[in-house]
Image (cartoon, rainbow, N blue to C red):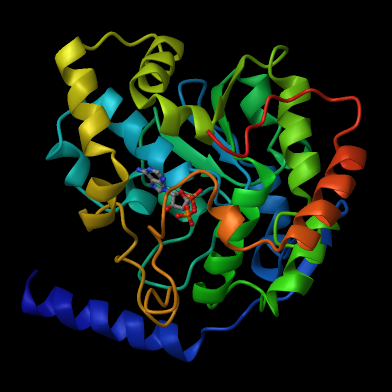
Length: 309
Ligand code: A3P
């Protein structure tokens, strides 16, 4: 990094820390979104992707970064150096985000990139800009079982100082169950994409399947993208995207986001990367209460979630 660049980077961080705030939530068509997203809603909704763009949609903390890395590596035939050209959010813009500097806003970044682009969103299906479906863009959805997703989101809300204050654990469980967290209800999110997956040709993946057999899921993504890479390259991609390797990789571990925004001393972005960590956080009573409510909220839909593998 040149001296000049270093100065502008540290200035940007200083500016960022001065403006860090936990944003309030404002409903957009009933879905609570952070105020800077809600206030910029018209531009987000009007976004027109190119038909060659690929959407990766998730509820927050379902394995987005992992999937983004797998896809970028597949698109670069497993070339690790090529995928170190920039941090994840720069290589694969986050559609609705408007982060404090030095990370540019998703829409601004997209303007500077030529298609095909790998575009991340946490928006529920009904809030995805209609241009994606009109242009028949491919879309990959990753779902993670509710309890692990909740635990991961809780830790993230503690360390991401722009997200609303998580408050105590017990209350956080209730907020999750009532759909009061940023990007709304987990239940509606996973059901919304599930209902549309066939009509819209959405590849619906599960975090637990990726943990159980990453190779199988990398191959599934490869086929969906009409790519063909060698068995050797697949093995390399599986290795490069292991939790350990992604945790150590500065391009994937979100060390690019300044500490006043992501305070990784509170909880690292690459935290545990496991299935079943919920058993270390839910008391038996909380688990029972959560399961009873889950039955009601997921009644009539049979999405094959697994809370343990
Ligand atoms: P935990 O908090 O349970 O560790 P997202 O990218 O959607 O924000 O999701 C982050 C979650 O995915 C975190 O979960 C993170 O550790 C996990 N994760 C990221 N990369 C992973 C990988 N290569 N293997 C397994 N889990 C990974």
